[in-house]
Length: 131
Image (tube, rainbow, N blue to C red; front, side, top):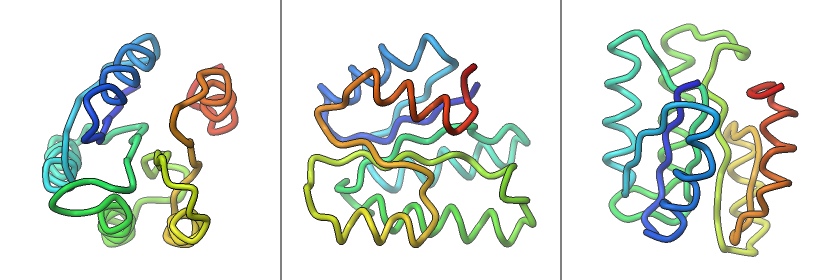
């Protein structure tokens, strides 16, 4: 499984990398621009990400705008819903409006920080990314 971790907080980035490396190859980015670059490069190479963990509050371009761009691009490319990258939004924000907006745009799941590893495993199973 190819995984992109988009997280500006060093501790969260290290934690997700260590945890998710057991399930696949992880790439790390620290802001919205890097996230879009990595996504576009993966699509151009014909090897898109299976999972993207996307922080809602990131520098340069926030996670919700990145999510919208990714979903728009996948639609333009004619990706079937089951072939799209699975996107889990991560945030320390308790703002339900941000989370609802992300679901409306097309995120697949939401993980509150600090991330509960068992809940994350349950989400990965539900998204059929792990057995």
